[in-house]
Length: 79
Image (cartoon, rainbow, N blue to C red; front, side):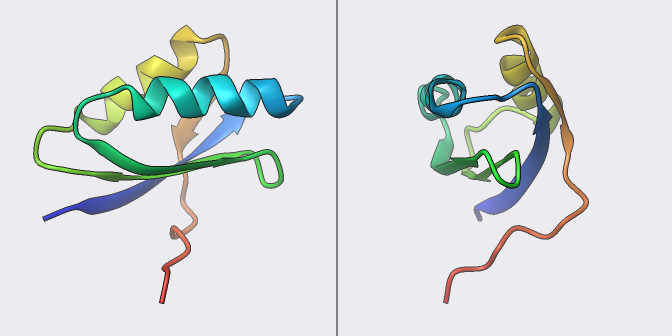
């Protein structure tokens, strides 16, 4: 079963920030449907069976130079 998770991200200032985070998460095995937005500064994704833990996903984002934490907001559910 896939689980949706979202992270609040600090430090993104432009579209290239969005792109670099999006590419890094999309390149991660088991991660699907990555959506990164500047407003609000958030990454939403779905984790498949092979996906890393939320802590590892946060590390991927922080390794790029941003601050990330699990979002308390519920990911927007697509109809």
